[in-house]
Amino acid sequence: MARVFCVANQKGGVGKTTTCVNLAAALHAQGQRVLLIDLDPQGNATMGSGIDKRSLTRTVYHLLVGIADLAACRVSSPEGGYDVLPANRELAGAEVELVELERRENRLRDALVAIENDYEFVLIDCPPSLSMLTLNGLCASHGVIIPMQCEYYALEGLSDLVNTIKKVHANLNRDLKIIGLLRVMFDTRITLQQQVSAQLESHFGDKVFRAVVPRNVRLAEAPSHGLPGVVFDPASKGARAYVTFAKEMIKRVAAL
Ligand code: ADP
Ligand code: MG
Image (cartoon, rainbow, N blue to C red; front, side, top):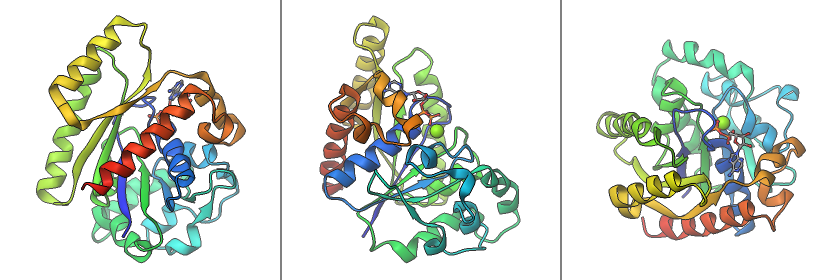
């Protein structure tokens, strides 16, 4: 049965999409069947997987509002080797439309039942907010992966997210847990980052993934080629870190 993880952090630009796309590609390279769900109207995970968001007639929006089933929306990442439920600007409308619908927080979870035997991993790229879309991601998931930069304000934002996760766990989804915190865009030369990283480890212990993703320009360049970084430049430090992270995820999930 597929294990579903959402990559969430209500801050923008913290590496959610980069983590989703590269984890999906790295898991595929490890022989796992992966579905990546783009829940952000910006459609960055879609584009970064080599799928043109402007050319799509069916997206995750149509799935959420009940116009199409999953099979009709699913596409595959040509180079990434994983499947994608793509998104584009249309998804922004779902935020309002969902409010009127039955089981509005559970639309995604309900839709995923049909494909739970098709994949080992389902990864959900959340938008930078704690909105109805993110709520759908959290309700559909077994766990949350939280990418974060080791900066001064990072911990402050974290408490809002952790509280939201606790509420969803208590009221909507008893399966939900935090799988781990992933340090991204890490620069070992910066003392403050080392300090925040040490703080994270002492506060969250085993919840902090051992893999650390460095700041690496090849990861930032890859999306403009429509490729995950791990495919674009497999030898780069960033790509190697995501491969290490994928292996760690496989182990962690086996122990769940
Ligand atoms: P989010 O989805 O949280 O908004 P992104 O994954 O889009 O964040 O990352 C924000 C920006 O930082 C993007 O331009 C991305 O290419 C870049 N980026 C992400 N991770 C790294 C990294 N490890 N090294 C360098 N640039 C990165
Ligand atoms: Mg993003």
